[in-house]
Image (cartoon, rainbow, N blue to C red):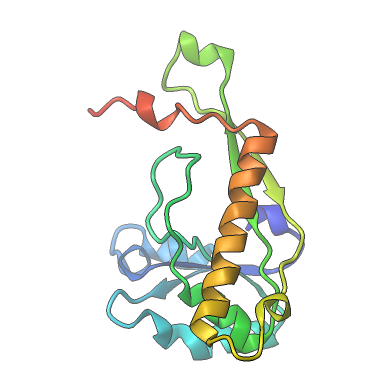
Length: 168
């Protein structure tokens, strides 16, 4: 959310992380809202209201993230359904991780991180008469995923970081 500053943003997170007794209060304070596992599309009214208030809404379209992975998994397409229904663009925000020489000595040292905010991708570009909405949403999802993968490649994202994680 800091990357989009000064624009106000909220972030979708697993409901478990938002309702946790130990840290849920902080997660909510930082602007996260819970996405239920049972019926994730039930957040549609909340999303619509937030968009009317001109808030940026951040989603991790993969759902669960792999630690330090530079290979995005398959995307959940409900996020792109929200973009289509509300006719709002998707801004691909890519986190690119770079290796640091100091990690040869201290492997626990975090990689250098660069955030790249891509150009807006509009739902209208994927709306075609005669094509079912599900196919339109899938096309948009695949396009956004390819933009993120291309950005990681172009910016030189390190692909070996998740392999070096100490399992303990």
